[in-house]
Image (cartoon, rainbow, N blue to C red; front, side, top):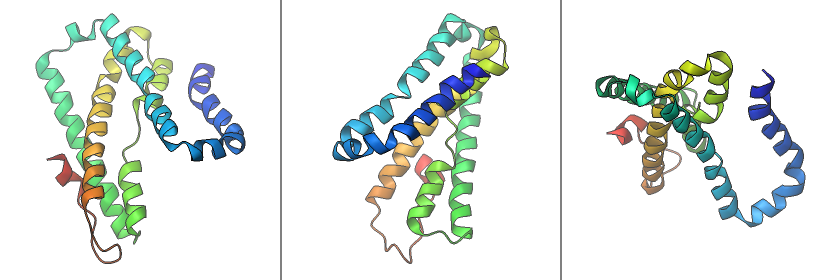
Length: 171
């Protein structure tokens, strides 16, 4: 439990405590912040894939199984994105809030899932257990990038038009 707290809770608490001092500098350098933000997940993803390779996951999982897991991940992401979009509309959210709901509704990433999996499951099985999460994370990144571009390119009246459907951006 302490290992998960150190990996997940400690950086969060440290960031909250440092926020007052570092926020002005980060606001002056948004590109640096974006690079650190995007780059912070890279070591976690690299570690997960590296541990999977060392554990021999690619010899234990057939291509057919991998394709099935991939398709299930794509379907699950489409359902979650569509549900978060529809939920935002049903709750009467404004355009900006509906966009936030679409992007935040699917975010359970490798950065939080891997530390929890290493705590809950034996080391020999963790790489196989997190394989669907590793694939989901990659699909999520690609799909959300496409949806983000679509939102950015869609010139709509913010008060009367509906948001593009996330599932449509996946096709």
